[in-house]
Length: 465
Image (cartoon, rainbow, N blue to C red; front, side, top):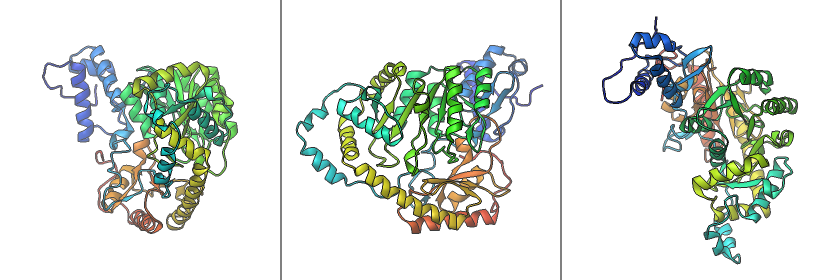
């Protein structure tokens, strides 16, 4: 017997698409809840009078859209993340009248762009940067990438460096170049939403691997590899987004060993690593033959300078370069030249230090107003993970906070799989223009937590987008 009976509207399209559309409509309408188990392929096929293959294709299409999750032997479930739009752009960031504590942006203090452009304009041969160049990047820019990677604790040669148009583009190249539709990436149960939306668009599946306060469990990763055909593992070891977990070196060694034994590609996206004062040992240093390291600039230099450096082992360089060629041929050389100038003349380090000092002031304010016991983070972090009191879900709190004039991001945005999500929100501290605006927003969140659900109804009453 089924617990869900979709209505398949008549039409000329394939039945499996009608099934996926019906599932999407029932999720949007609230009749299917996050985490709800769906009928087996056979049960639903019998109930609808269609073939098992039709249901299998319909469920696969729904999984591609991010609506359901499923593993062999455990069934198919409505994804937890359908209760909110997982996109980081879905919360209307920087909307007038709304304090932005959702999107994570660098603290105020960008380098002097006018002065930088004047210096660029005076360089001999600068016009040559407007021409086509080698896809992996110009040799001087790749050499700068070596020096930038050293900030993370990596010692590499320029041949290992590929210049990309920002960290998200670098992640796109990894998924496009190193995986194929239908293949699986292991990740944390709460992970970067940009990975989720990118994987869904490319038809790549995500498998949530549980962990503890030290990060992803090596034993659970090994179990997932036995259960599912895992091809890669995605990790943010220094500052996990959204929980701020830092994986200790011993755990990193264990994860690297599992990846090596199972032949996994490690995608090390340590975009927030330089927001910590001290750097750990990168996975790329522990397992250099299996790890692609993404060294971005947006969080510590400036977000609009869309340049990142990929450090890749020989086995992956051709695929990554081909993906770069097929997306935009090359990262913009003029932007790479500006980034290289600021890295090599010390501007990047000075800007980073100023941003860390500002982040420390903002974290001290957050601890003062919210309390250290309910928010997790570190002294110079750009965001904190806020645990909510009983009666709230993350999605409901996000909606209530927005009504009160504050944008935050619910735990559901980051969820992978069908396991229940703890009531929590990510609170970005660095996007507001000053401490006074941040303080007002944090007090609003504290008041909201103290007031309960503010008449918004019981937790889980339909999706919040």
